[in-house]
Length: 115
Length: 117
Image 1 (cartoon, one colour):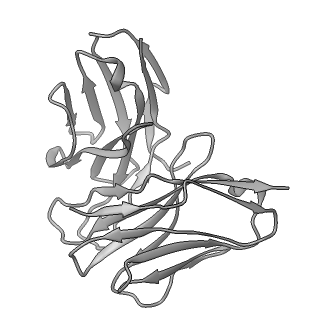
Image 2 (cartoon, chains in turn brown, purple):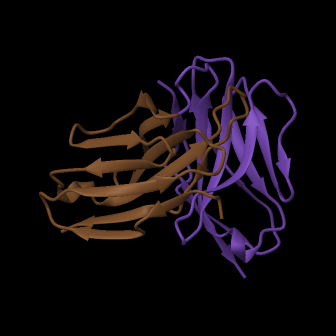
């Protein structure tokens, strides 16, 4: 158990819908990262938040957005869903306290299926 | 942009034997971090081992060790005394150490390791 929690574990929805994925980081971790794992694209970085602020963006679609709340949990919002959005979405957290040895620990992931 | 290549989509090993998984990467940076993550059938991403580029000594974690060749940009993972529980997808990952906000992990496509009893 990494200490990172994600809910829900599975999500099945229809095209055009909107869903919210939730992540709670490890105790003491200030930074949250979202990754998408799909068969064709592999593991891709989507977005990073640090202490409530967006710090880096990767290959995140405009239909997707995220935020990190004052209690440090994060939500990833996916809207106007398409079949191709079906994937495993991981949240990871790290302390990002300036130490170069900062390591990301992953949650169990949310499996999204768009029908 | 950095890229990570795992040239072996699949590997197999007999229980108790040793196997080496390959990883190469491309970067123009001199300082960075490399990781091996394991993803078993449960899909959980588990950190196996980490290597700092500024350290010449290869990292070791119990039965797992790396062969880090900075000049060749190579970072292989050796698993000794393979166990059935080692069966998983293994991902090599790169992380910049340039600081700022550039802490994302760049992953390879993965190597599926099968352990035969």
